[in-house]
Image (tube, rainbow, N blue to C red; front, top):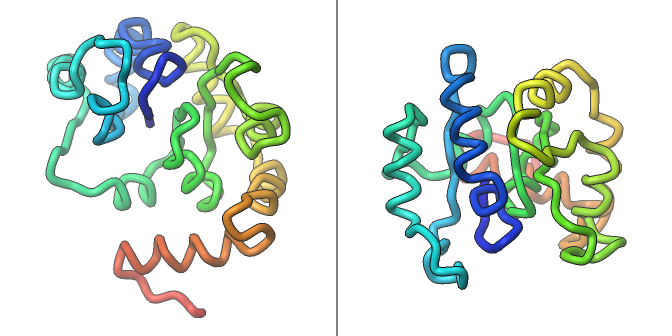
Amino acid sequence: ISTWGQHSLIDSFGDDLLEQVKDLSARYKFILSLHPRYDEFNKRNTESRSDILRRWEAAGVHIDRSAGWEEYVASADVAVSDHSSLGLYHVLLNHPMVLVDIPQDQYVMDSTFALMKQRLPVLDRGADLESLLLQSMSTDYSSDLALVRGRMLSCQGRALVRYREEISELLGLNVDR
């Protein structure tokens, strides 16, 4: 899951991560979610969103331009995320997660992201991708994720219920309110 900017997943690890994904594609299925407004907010004038998606697709990554993100968030076994808001949905769904390392001066110290970075595996080089995926899937981070969920500020202490309801509605699932 990648947002935009210098410290995003794509801009931080780009080719290094793509090489890892190619090497691991026989054992794992990868789906790339690149922010739809990547071009608009990417001030570095690097590759366009379309070029990035084409390059990753040529490497064997499933790119579905017609599907919404909701079904992939709900069905993913593990997420690799930068500071994208989609990463928070994985937290709310109690999914294993690997975070992309972001320099400390780029986020607020008492933020949800800071707490996630303290509690979850952090990717600081592409070569560690598989070991961190395995760690994330074999370690129970439920209590760490519960702590993060309780600190989400949009509706502090109630975010889990609100987002579960919203995600369920988007996916067309019945949920008790």
